[in-house]
Amino acid sequence: MKLSYYPGCTLKNKAQNLELAALASLRALGVEVEEMPRWNCCGAVYSLAQDDLIHQVAPVRNMIRAMERGSDAVVTICSQCYNTLARANRLMANDEEKRGTLNLFMDEEPDYHGQVQALHLLQLLRDHVGWERVRAAVKVPLTGLKAAPFYGCSLVRPCEVSILEQVEARALPVVDAAPPVDPSLGPGSRILEDFLAALGADVVEFPASTECCGAYQVIANPSAANDRAGKVLSAAVHAGVDTLVLSCPLCEYNLGTRQDQGNDKLAALPRVSTIYFTQLLAIALGLADVCQTELNNDATRRLLRARGHVASPAL
Amino acid sequence: MTHIPSPLSPAALATVARLNEISGENVHKCMQCGTCSAVCPMVPSMRLTTRAAMQLLQFGEAEEVSRAEMAKLCASCHTCTVRCPRGIDVARVFEAVRLLTLRDNDDMITLREIPAETLESAPPIAFIAAFRKLTA
Image (tube, rainbow over all chains, first blue to last red; front, side, top):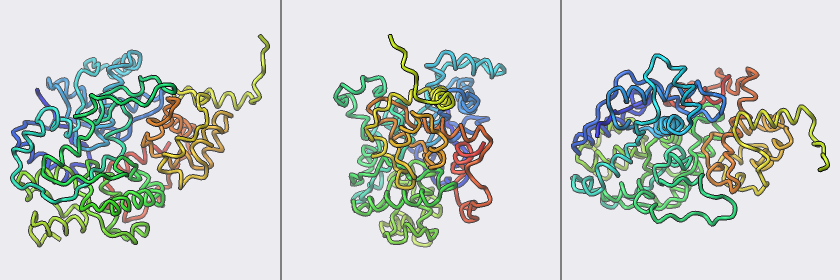
């Protein structure tokens, strides 16, 4: 399986700790991914308007770049990139009319019909590496670390691009049918939980794990975003977690970085560690020195120091 | 069959049609159960509940919904979309409300009001997403 790696803007910027830990870990696991050339912005948010196709051009172009290289899949790490690429890709695969319009509009590009897969790194680890191989490669098990998965919105909604479920929930009959309980949900339905268990961590059930972190409202309506972060973090404190485990730089900013910025909605709460899943993977694989914990919040550095994963001076 | 004229004004009917066209949804499928209000993470910051906004939209009152900052505060987390028992993609409906404002060239962000600390520290996707969603 040939993989193209799509980093997106933020992994080259504020979230280098998300990217470098991932790439070093993949090398250690023997998975070859190559950054695709000429990638462009994914759009960050998927356009929800039926009459707005121009905003699909950017994500689709990325998929075309991967197709030109003969890739079977585009692998992303950032949740927002994953959501935007996966949804645009589904549009190209399933909507004949819009696919035709977009292909015609991009007449300098080869025609594309959604044949390259858009994958999140967690899906790659689950479906192509396998938790057993991850478990076998662990050198520093995260024993006793109470880790709570935080999915946020983009990894799990809408259903058709969820990394958890592979059922078409929206295609099921609504109203008069009982909520679907699909046994095939089993292996995929707890992807971050299974990931953390493979690293030897104690997985903590956490009621806010698929809630909104406040997202980009931190720019437009910071007070509303702070309220969201406060609710998520207080749920984490109540659940007694050592750290939240994230995949999205926007979640990390709202829940992690902003704790250290005198955010009064969070002032009354104990400080909570927030760490990217790729950093935990790197630590467990014995690669703690690529983790760039100077980009995490204070609580995370304190936690990792206390557990002896990183040396003291990095504060 | 007797034709019962709509109680809505032609302008309100046109707004409903426009919302449905942009969103690809039918706001009249909403049966006012309130599930969307119960699950919406932003409702505490909004001046209406999601359910109340859906009812106003059924009557073409998009401007009142905009004034209540519903579309401005909706972060498209899609919780309402996946929970709606009527299968309405509510996030698309609020995108349509947002676009009715933005397509009149009215921005929903004042750039000068973004604090310097946020400009310095926020990740690029925060800005791209906010400007994509909230500027004309």
